[in-house]
Length: 146
Image (cartoon, rainbow, N blue to C red; front, side, top):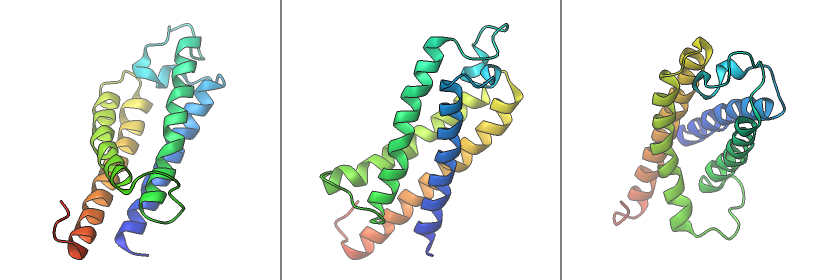
């Protein structure tokens, strides 16, 4: 497996961890303190409804990330998505994941601050490396690619 494949697998696995956590929160797992910066009321073990809905939305978003990485890497069929958009979206994610890392570093709960920020940081680095390597590969084939 080449570097792109390894980075894609790392990214997909870490997204799967985040996806599982969001789905667990959405179905009332007792981890409210370790999510959303500890904003859940202290007397709640599970998230209030509005945060559970937010976890569902996050899970739907996260479901698309593995598809995007694998489709952009030509591991699975890309469907009707234009090539230009498919190559742009991983770069957008590579920019969003560091923001997620900074957000989790500000969390109150140690699991969210040190555990999930570590996952987010590795995911951000994997996405950055993946995008840079894909761009380098494209530039080697077509020097007009930037």
